Image (cartoon, each protein chain N blue to C red):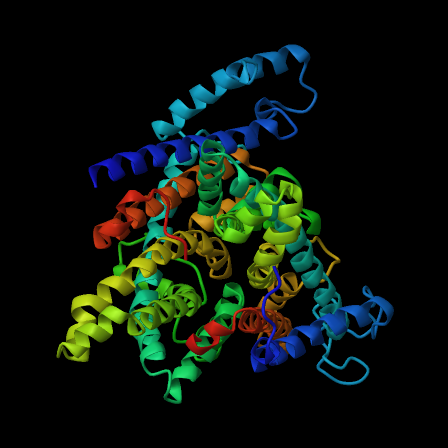
Length: 321
Length: 279
């Protein structure tokens, strides 16, 4: 396990380096010099050179990259072109919305999908087995923003029991208010996410229910519940955990769209605005932080998978679905 | 290379038929839109937010454009985005996957590690990156979605190629003097395409959804192109006064994606009858 841990950590570091290189190149290869943001229209060549020197864009690319990486590592994410405010603190203030949104939606999706997926597999011969399959098939096809719109229409505009969007100015000072504004976005993400999760849980359960070891254990006199508890759960959990890692990462970034629907001041709306305004330090900062998050989630999912299933410890990458 | 084609493999799957009907309906609408539409794209003669009545069967949007016309153009855009991304992602992915499958150990490891990193970025994020670097257009969306997809396709192709290359008939074919390119054409591709095709069909559905999300965020095809995602975004403010505009694009989007997904499931049943029992 230690060998695996070391190899996986090395892989994480290399991935982070590669990803930051891509992000760095993206900003530098874009048309226009970042120094332009410091200048007004009609600047003299001397002023341009001075600005370039100040911002560092006159030095060779590898040197710029190392400097930039050093800044990123100390969470100095630069300043916005538009608002000229530092990017780091703004991201931190927006994580206060995005992280709870992601985690709550993730938890709700797991709480819904695991029992439903299990029942869909275990009771596939009853009428509600195929029904659950059909509903999850439909859920896979519903765009998350449209579901959000429909929920707003129903619960905020028609019944008027929940806010249509926005987030309290004082963040979590009043937790009840904050949770109320997150209710619809959380349900929106969780519903879409559980649709795909149900399918994975169901197929993992089917694999376990069909397995020889479960039949043998039952033949030895164990009850169904006992057999599932001793052997079933652990085996079914392995593929599901790798999917959970991917799903959590997807939710985190799926928040981009959902935050736009509900006008939440999160990381996603910050990214969308940054792209629309060509505010590259914002785009770069948000993408850097979210990439970091996604890669760390993958790391944790891989470790969790190997804690549960020792057979995987020799393999580096995630087990294929 | 040829699989046994008994009655069980050719037996029609109901999933396949339903999928064909749903997806086929949208394809038909898109094709019709090339030759005939109820109104010109920018005709605003119907007045703003008109309710469904002749001659505007589904009413008009907030600029007075005919909703049915917009939906038909949207079908074209959705299919262009879906098919374009799948074509790009498929060609890139299969090529990279074949390379990795045949490559020496270290090259294979390098490609696999790169693919793992690429796959770690969800499609939408990668798409936003491309849109940030280029401009918001249908081309950018297709490029972005196709690139993200190619990593997934490449990883699948690599696994499939490795599995086929371990078979005895490859050794036999090589021993009898067949060159590698011919082995690929005669043995590898015919053995991996059924699984690949199913996966590409699933990716088509995801690509359509991704394009809709990008358009909803204003990062897809710019106006006046009526992408379903942008139509929904525009109709959001008037959902209570003109509900049809906020419902119809979503419904056709779901019909297309469900259709394509069922088509993929049906294809899998036909390609691999042993799985049918387990679904």
